[in-house]
Image (cartoon, rainbow, N blue to C red; front, side):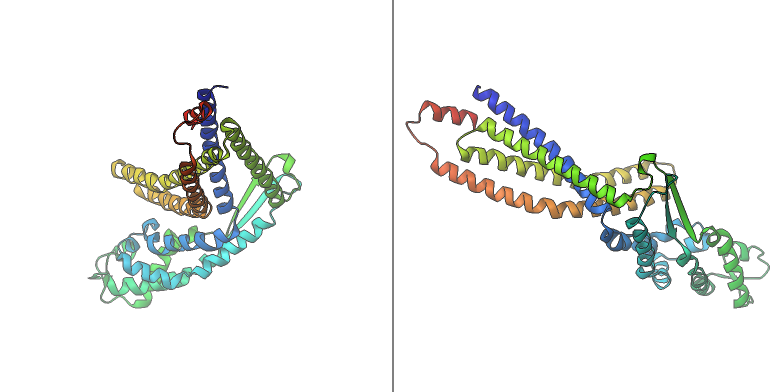
Length: 338
């Protein structure tokens, strides 16, 4: 086999390895992120809490609350909702998922408890009433809409009347929409009936990763067979392939973190649609991709550093031990290949 053809095939196998490696690492990142209970109890809970406390005001369509100074709203929400409240809910859902089983009719049921939130409504009303009663502009009782729009508070209005009116408005426009729980029910293919989904997906994931590792190993072997000898040249190709694959995987993940939010911002600036939905999706996206990238970093950084150090070491060794003058025809063939 000619040197050019061998080098060409080795390059093709290297590019194939890189593509497969990126796909495999991304699958691993998805699995280690979204099939990991600690993700939901940790960074997911933290991010949802931050979204509710720091950005929740944007999603409440009740004008008096929308007009509250952001720092004041954040401070009030921190007294109403704690991370422990969310952790209890998330732990309940995670516990259900860990024993999730399809019933004999082929249905899968998941309940998201929301009763903890409905218990917060009284405290929410009290905190908002305290703030609005003391901060809304004063007006005269002849302004008939003050208890509907809450744009002002009459000087003579008793505090108890204001509290009752605000609680009624919040119940009608916001709080009454919250159920005690969200009951999610899905019908799945009949071959899953009666199966423990956690065991099924764990077994399936193990088989997929085993196949992927075998494919990557075979590609490295094929690269080595194309280079063939000397062994130091084989190592150079193998280590370069691993380094490029892991480095490009990292670049792809970082691009998802940087480029997509920029595109979202551009869409927001030119879109005439309401920005609330875009902002909500962007917050969810940043949460998901950020956690996903963090898990990828834990895998890729050691591979990148290890393969780079070994690759440089092998290149230095190869350079110091390469033939100088009077090389044979075989030596020239190796130089053409490498």
